[in-house]
Image (cartoon, rainbow, N blue to C red; front, side, top):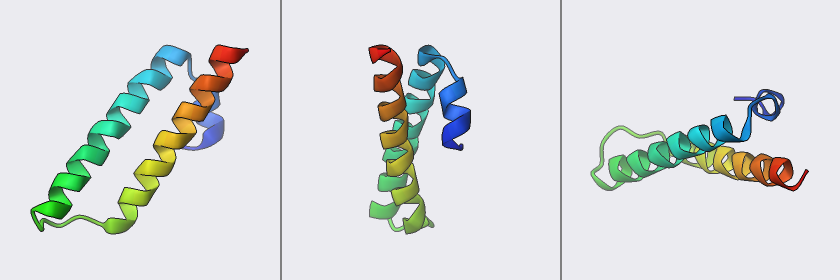
Length: 63
């Protein structure tokens, strides 16, 4: 999801997306530890998405 698309969402929707991203991160970590097919590059992308979502939520709550 692009940052411009994230900025159009409400805080509630952003929180839902944040929870989904955290669940995805947890699933990726489990896949990596159990040696299942997991793209290690996706791990970094998910972490960056989480950081972006948290930043946008903070911006909207402060405004």
